[in-house]
Amino acid sequence: MLAFSSCWNNSRHTDGEAMIEEIVDLGFPNIELSHGMTIAKLPGIQNAYKRGIFTCSGVHNYFPSPVEVMIDAPDAYEFTSHRPFDRQRALDMTFRTLDLAAEFKARYLVLHMGSVPMNPKKWTKALTSTVAGGGQHNPDYIQAKIEFVRKREKISPLYFHRALEALTTIAERATEVGVKLAVESRSRFEDMPTEREMIELQSHFADHPAVGYWHDFGHVQLKHNLGLLDHEEWLDKISPHLLGGHVHDVQWPARDHRTPFSGTLDYAALLKFFPANCPLVWELSPTRDTAEIKAALVRWRREFPDRN
Image 1 (cartoon, rainbow, N blue to C red):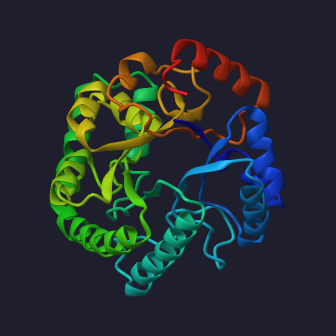
Image 2 (cartoon, rainbow, N blue to C red):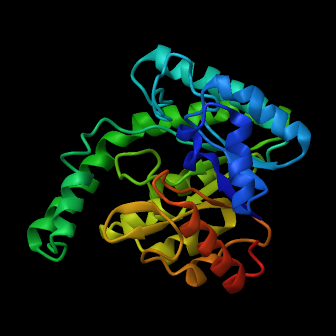
């Protein structure tokens, strides 16, 4: 099932109904309601839903945004935080989002699970800068990458435990409202979970029907470009847990949320791992223009007629 994320035009609209109508006019009647949404837009979205002009494929936490957060910040409150207030606020906002997901008959809720306290400027951003300069095969780069992984692995158990504990609580509510929890692959190695942790997390919930994996094409490709994983091998390994994915492209080495076919991704090689009729949600930058998106959609429907 092809869908489109409201992250593309959310910031341009004050009225939720007009926001939905613009996406439908692109050619996407299935929409993922994304983070960064002010509560003021909710009545308009509800009106559009009641009119029957769109179906809600899923929702991305937090929806709507916490009222005290003035910017689009899906990680404003983390399940892994040292601050008990933040962890509880994250749970409360997720429960609220689940209730709205059920109202819109969403199939899934995309979740970010948190992070470990490592400065991305020192690690992921520094590695990305080296790769951008063509230094990914230098011994110093390889050593820095190994040091990064070792340090991340050393400090991660506490934060993984917090994420697992939170997901256990959320899964109870998700089962009650009939919405699946889609734990998203993240773009930074500092984020929770890493691929090793994702396998452990999915194994922990193997018998829980509400928990699965959400594949972000661009996020995983960024890690691939840093030499932290192989994109196809990872999809092959995690595919038994797949619920769906965020589709966007990547321009080398780290410019993501580009329109499909404008970057380096080989969709034919990657889509073979996805079950039929699972949600494939175009999650594009607000900078992508309408004509480019419509042209890409025509090509997508021509090349992947069974993925619409």
